[in-house]
Length: 267
Length: 310
Ligand SMILES: Nc1ncnc2c1ncn2[C@@H]1O[C@H](COP(=O)(O)OP(=O)(O)OP(=O)(O)O)[C@@H](O)[C@H]1O
Ligand SMILES: [Mg+2]
Image (cartoon, rainbow over all chains, first blue to last red; front, side):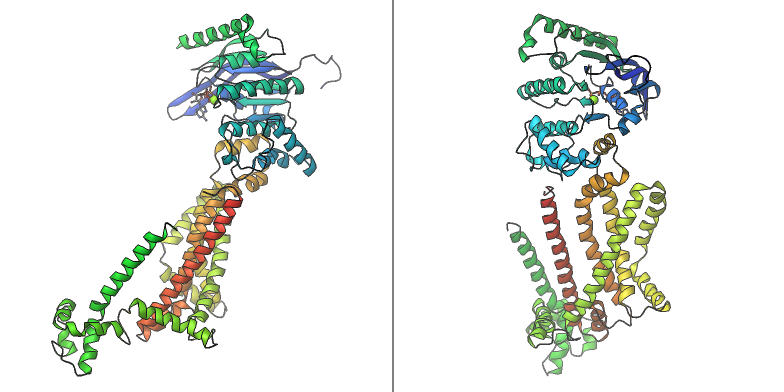
């Protein structure tokens, strides 16, 4: 950070400008992202919603330096995604839990900590803390196959929370869970976000989930993958579950639905 | 325990077929013996009998057929004879207090086992190192893999004498080293193939996860590729140790070897004592079975502890 110039209140954490990504496949080029521009500020909770194949995962992977854009620019914390990745600036929750089957739940959560060279005592403390956070205390010694799909997904979230990354990239983390568990985890995630002031990019297919969680909802549409609408939420940061019955909430949900429809009508 | 019944059934069928086969296989020798003892045999003389099929001989001399089950030097010994010979060359030797006698199979089995284990260790090491090179380097994959495959198309029986001659040329005494080399030659391939598959088993998302942690190459090897390959490793080790045993026995076959199960087979052949061949063969089978079972137990325990028991 430069010494001159005032420190801005809300520094941009992720800045994408005219981002393009074309996959060369055997069936010809696939335009997964086309002209995608978006700013995510510190402390934002941004949801990405759109039909299957519109490039949500691809966009997230660009932020994580797991995919290289073919055009445009993207910065994370003001640096390239690669530098951000090397600085371990983000935690990534994949669409599938992807726990290592030969590691217990506790040791799965300690995996990033071992790699990043945390001390033994610190690891033990953090594993216990994050397990409690996702309500899996007591399952530390169990192997992944001994847990339900939802519990595995929670463990994979715990794994991304175990180290202190300011950015959390989550790709449909609750996609496979039932409604009740999902509500519960949504609430917990909001509390965590409020407490830690992390910046969260969150992919979902559920309109209520997107509206309930986000400060900003990004509507995308496919072929080529692009952003069709960005909706700033007017909901307060403090959100009990029953906020979902309020007219304000339903109004935003309506806008998201209209945005999705418009994207569909395009092709 | 439920799997025991089918296994025993198959075993019973094999033993049954074996007993049935003894009669036609041994009928000529049996009739020669009966004739020498002054019995009436149709037709007379072993030369004319060569023109007659064994089925005819058995039909015409049915009272002598059972002699074939108790011959001194049978073409095909009965399972019981093989069992007796095995006992005579192992258990009885121990009972007499001479377990390490060179006439017993314990001594020869031990010689074979030693070479097998050395060859297994060497072959496994080569296989794992080769697999790591292939997985991590494209150059190694393009240069090593074709040679590894070609190496397995060369008949080992042709190669074994050359390895033995070459090693004595460079001044290596005895059969131990060349035998281990031949054994390793057969053993490394299944380990190589299995480990390449195992080290490549992690899917993209598991690798991506480590990338998000900015894990080093060594870290992802130790924490992801290596543990993911363990089930594959054990499967190929079981194939590898059986191959190592075959390699050792092949290394003991060329003339000159005097100890080891392979040498016993060769000597049995030269001196016309099929019983010695059969008992050496069974000793080798028992050895292979024991080694594979041992690895299987280690595999079960390891995978269970790793939470990957199936
Ligand atoms: N590695 C790849 N190679 C080729 N094409 C790809 C690759 N990854 C993604 N694509 C294509 O890019 C497009 C966007 O895919 P992406 O996975 O980002 O969609 P998504 O919005 O996450 O969809 P979903 O909601 O189903 O997860 C799709 O058409 C997909 O087929
Ligand atoms: Mg996706």
